[in-house]
Amino acid sequence: MALSQEEINKIHEEEAERAKAQQLYAAKHPQTVVVKKKTSKLAMGCGTLFFLFIVLPIIIVTVRNASPEQRAQDQAHQAADAERMQQTLTELGRVEVLSSTIEFDSIGTPELVVKLKNNAGQAVDAVTVESYFLNNYDEPIGQWNSKSREAYRGIIQDRIASGATYTATFNLAVYDLATKVDSTTVVKVHYEDGSSYAL
View 1: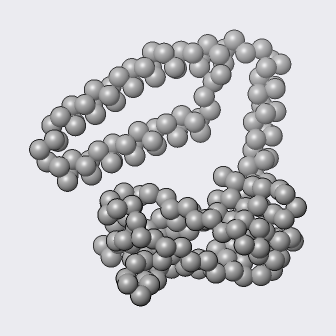
View 2: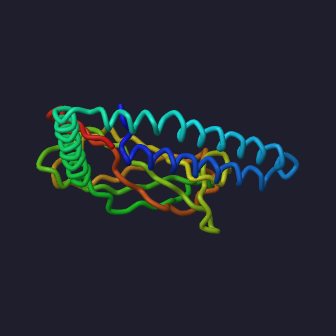
């Protein structure tokens, strides 16, 4: 099975994220920089060679050997996938994030406060939001004081009627350096009729 351009781009993005994480690690642990860089370059070199000499020829042969019927079937599947993705994005967009802020509880623990509005024509009984956080230096913040871009996912399992707003509060004890919300998006929605949409 051939990899799509989107899958290839995702692989490259993941490699770039790993390289960035290794750079951050190297900055925090200077004694291990040389070993990590050599390992990283060797691993990246092997991965690149594997892709160029094993994966890419298989993709090329698969594409060349595909019959016209197979190509038409693949195009039909891609069109159906694109249509499903468009429907998913439309449905997820019906639950709107009105605001997303960080507040602190009585002992100074950060809490994510998300205000949502259900613009769909029916009630929602579950919503998953995904948020990324920053510190006061506008650096990405992950769990346990890490300076990495880690997603936090919060799940709301209360009924939100059509046209209603809802405010949810999530404890961020493991994101204790977070002071700002970088972004919050709805990534999964479940309607009362049983239909569900997710990225």
